[in-house]
Length: 633
Image (cartoon, rainbow, N blue to C red; front, side, top):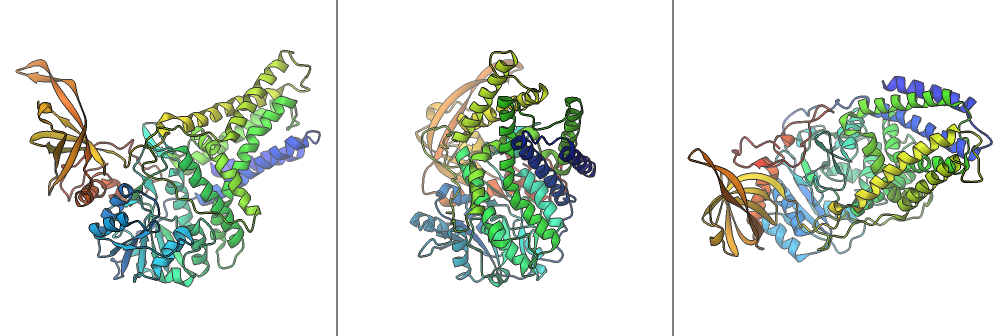
């Protein structure tokens, strides 16, 4: 299908170039043709990249005898975000060291790390941001392999044991695993067809495995293991760009090292909760991509294979697609206002050809990527990204421009539920679209002195403007949604099912987080509940006791069978907040939640098919399963 789509697309473009370019309206027709050509080239590169996404091989041999250190760089992430990562990292096998690299120089983080069994490291200054932090650690820590985890990415029990065997290959520099997220209510998550998808799924479940086939995987900053000697051979982690991971990967390949992508989720983190965090992250990635493109020039040979050059250039120039999106939004608006003819061809010839090419391209992309691709979803996020990516791509034209590494906010952002601020460019596009539609309608019925020279171009443009306006308004509504307003929770609550005791009363835990939980009481014990009470979480191999404060209590009637007759009884939901100073218990809870229960066999089985089954949303987890048979997410 991809070959058919490519062949038909270039035949269509050849016809467009020869027979349909309108020189009278060159300022519309040439940009439109350039956008179509950009898309066709992208389809070719996409096909090459995604030709085989199931080509990964299992590592051979046993776990090598290497000194391993898990590095957790942090700057301003709150302790509630860092705690699960530290606890789960310390509990990993085999024997290793866990280091918290704190550029925030916070005493409470030092105390937390030491209490949980990790080591703490800081430095005199914050030069080089995350890359500088890691480089400083490499000069202090004695290790052969380092695992890098962002402060919010909690590893599963298999994180080291599944990846270390790759390092039996002495030329292997790094192993990258997918980034996945456990806060399915984030800005970049959407429910579609009964499943939950992240905006990043298309990369980690299709594009990254495709790059692996060409030997062109790259380090993505977190959820990865790296060989220290390889990093030292290229002078450490690159600090000249804000995407030090991609830049370092290119330098490693040029020195003859290898990288691999393991298609198995071995850690989960926090996706940006709101539009601000989402756009801040994409702006940093786009700026870094432009810096790497300018500094490293991966389109040149210089130690890279042809496949690696194509793979890196494909990833870096993808950010320019935002300019094509902007052109596709503005050209129909201009046609509706002016009646211009960007395509000099009869409607009965052009429209069938255009629709056929479009459908073939969409079908090819869908088949190459699998269910992670959706036209409407991709278009909405492309519009949301516009204000962040457009100015970032200008960094390519400013050689002396130095971008500042800005950490994506995670965790609690305040007490107020402030809705997201819509970037002005989206309001401008919405107003221009609406006004152009009104102008088109008024001109069509003769209410303006202007007359269109041809009917079908402005009619087709009006259809495109209408569809675009719907997508722009959908993007604005998502940014302004109360659901993605300021995050008041310090940590994510995960649905679970576990027996417990609240004081002396039996209860069932409904959800848990690092800061509190919600339980269901079926006994008439509401009058006995004090303001403070102990919650005993009854797990198969241990009991974890938390000192809690009752935050809310409400009852609801539920049907119950008594002596064969239906009657009503009251169940009570109790909201609890954990008292401070219980880091050890919270560490045990983190391991119970993130190692066997929440991630379960999602982390235990490699994802070998692009049509992977995703958990619809965080489903209730059964914590009553034994430790050697973890409950499935």
